[in-house]
Amino acid sequence: MGIFPLFKKKDFFSAKEKEQIVQSIGLAEKETSGEIRIFVESKNPFMDPIDRAGEIFFKLKMQETEHRNAVLLYIATKHQELALFADEGIYKEVGADYWNNAVKNMIAHFSKDNIAHGIEQCVHEIGETLKEKFPYSATDDVNELPDDIVFGR
Image (cartoon, rainbow, N blue to C red; front, side):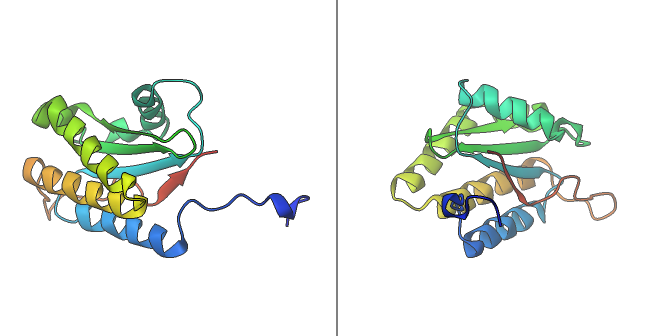
């Protein structure tokens, strides 16, 4: 217990929502060599959301996947910002329009006050694309990055 228990930070997702999101990542990655991570923080420290997502992407060493096919979903809750940052392997395969449409779809789910579901849908769609472009190989595929949600400040 902290010194100021009355000021306890409220979790952004319920335990059930966290579990469902992590499960959606596992399911999406099951049929691809691609990797998906989610980073959530309350405020973006005064930069473009794409730049912040890129900064987090490299801090999490997501560029070290074998096929350069990792994707980061970045969310700043209080600033109501989100971005998708894709490594060069998958970005080159699908192009900018794909990522812009994925963000638009996610915003549509978020505007209905269903953020966890919007994330799950986005993870599913990205997983399908990764499956198509980087299919799972039973002989050499490993889960290169953790599936858990990373929470910043």
